Length: 256
Ligand SMILES: Nc1ncnc2c1ncn2[C@@H]1O[C@H](COP(=O)(O)OP(=O)(O)OP(=O)(O)O)[C@@H](O)[C@H]1O
Image (tube, rainbow, N blue to C red; front, top):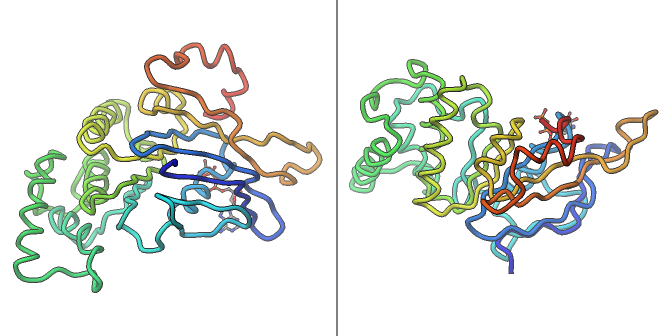
């Protein structure tokens, strides 16, 4: 049985279809990159995996059950614009990632001290020890994104959802973030869903690259139909090399 299963999922807002007939099976530990034209429903798909919204039709299961509604338990999430708390220090932000796991959202006493030790271990791992007592506003974009990823990982999610996590970073920082994510993944064996507008990034990091697009298109009414998964590429070593993809599928240029 697949770890994440998506069966005949449709999503509409009012009478406007956004996604239609989406089917997908993902094994635990896979890295799924998602590309597609702006507005075709990629973030909507992530929100359904997060149970922030329910499909109009169809079903999504994670490990055999409906996705839990509480954040941070099984799924961590990182958006392009940092999801860290501006009023907390870097270390407090990491501890806050654990706080979500308690009923009250707060940790006390010995538990808190242990959480601080674990936070320092995480800061070591994401290379932010030297700024542990600073506030996010004083960090560079790449450091803030590392903090956001560290915070999401602190809850030890089985699934990491990344929505254009590196979109706002300069090319050099982006490359080091690719390295960072690749290392983290090798250590944690997480299942990752990453939305990106960069096709090359999708193929570099993903095991699979899903393309969301509209299979049906009415030129007189562009909103008449929803998008679905039109391609599901194997991006592992023996998959189609990224360089050949645009030659083979020129329409994909629209997706990035
Ligand atoms: N809560 C909502 N109510 C109504 N319409 C919405 C809602 N959320 C998203 N939409 C619309 O649904 C469509 C899909 O949005 P979504 O953000 O999922 O696209 P996307 O593929 O992630 O786009 P982008 O690449 O630009 O981030 C858009 O036209 C958006 O305006």
